[in-house]
Image 1 (cartoon, rainbow, N blue to C red):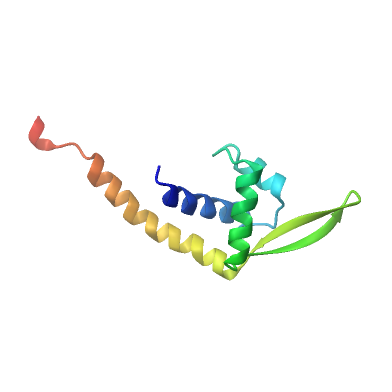
Image 2 (image 1 turned 180 degrees about the vertical axis):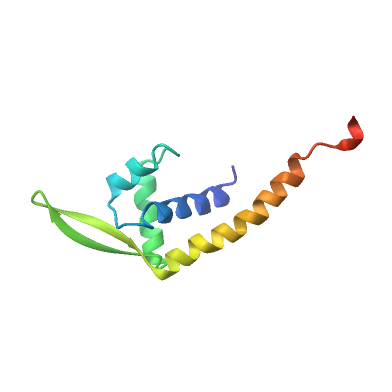
Length: 106
């Protein structure tokens, strides 16, 4: 898969993982596991990129005597998901075109 396409898809997947509630790294990986494998190093690179792009914010909460970073999606992050959903319609149309059976080969 093209690296830029995969990067964009992973960004949207991470945003979707925190769309309904704030979350932290380990839980994001756990929530995504049924759909795709994501290493911690890849996740934290994505989270940093999304934070830099103002698509999420970070705050810390004490948990069992340690500080845990939580990630919160911003309006820009929600917009990125909406944009992806619009783009996906075009991607599906292209996929259908590429994979359609040629009626002339019957």
